[in-house]
Length: 169
Image (cartoon, rainbow, N blue to C red; front, side, top):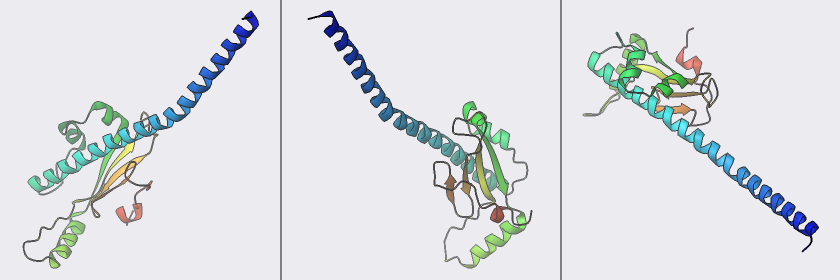
């Protein structure tokens, strides 16, 4: 075998190896990114679910939102510091008039021994900070009126219906 043939074969092997690596990266990177996005969505959903449960328990034991401290709640439910750094949490409470009106309306339509729940809040929301790899401003929220999750990792909604949440700015 000549030296020229040996060098050209090495070049072909190098090119073939590079092509295989590039194809592997093309196939792996999107899957890795999807996995990371799903993992981050599950992480924030678990945080909002934990906050949702904490708020419901607080409301049931205290009977009002008075004295609720969101920062203390986030620490008490045991959220990782990374989650607290990557997400800002907020709760849009209902006024007592709205809450009472909704409760009375639901009680009018109740059959015997039926459980009635009216959320004391409109939404519990997590918004991504600038440090968050998912991108600043992405949101996940729990809609208390519809008892459903929306936004990042839940559906295609980007923003809640702000007009419904704050009808009289």
